Image (cartoon, rainbow, N blue to C red; front, side):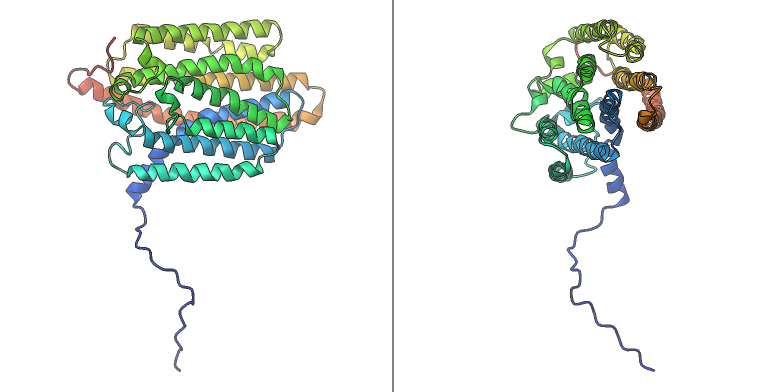
Length: 378
């Protein structure tokens, strides 16, 4: 019996000649994405949600998913954008850390720069499309502001991080606009409590970003990049870091005393003060002479900033549970907030374990290397 050959499909897929990415290229793209930093915006979304629930608004999962997708997508877009437009500064940084100096993927030639730029544009267009699903004109306006600031952080013609506005831009997007968006979409309002929390968190995040730029100071000066850290001496940056944190914690004490911030949230925030003190002391007394010390400075400043957002969210959940202890209608919303904080905690723990291993390798390399290479001049 003769088997008739099947005819080819009429609309066959044409080969374009473009090769599939290799496993090495895929792994390089993952490193380029720097997914661990997305946790910084995740916790501020959670903070906005917890403020809405504390104000008596039930958690709406659909609205949360939209906001989280937009914020995480925009954050990821910023990574790709920064990798491309910050290439000269990253290439000039000869002593990068796990927190500064970029992913090193483009600098080391593991991927072409246009891969990062293409990814940035794809994420930009995707987030513009997602805007249509965001409910309400006010929320969309906030999204547009976030998207514009994120793109123009390093992209021309504005290049905020090259004109002395990088630290405040990052702090403004992460600790002001992001929780405002998350809270407004859930509650259709911006409670006074959110404003009270944003002020100290903004100061702490701006101070943290000064430390990040301090580590890149020598490279930034080489390429003409103007940041607060390049405008000041390293010691002056340390003093500004101390001043910003002192003002932030002073505000927390005052607002907690006035009951503008729930006592549980105020106590939780004040519990992070020793982290700020340690970071400040080491910044002033332990100069960034080599990569290992710079790694430690970046780690301490980052952990402290993340701890404040986490502490505020945990304190608000405790305050909410106590405030509505006789009202079961918000019990599910409180449980969801606890779940979100728990998920963040698990992810953060995994990142810290991984970074601890990497920092240990850096220290070992520094101890076996020849003379220290100065990261900056005092």
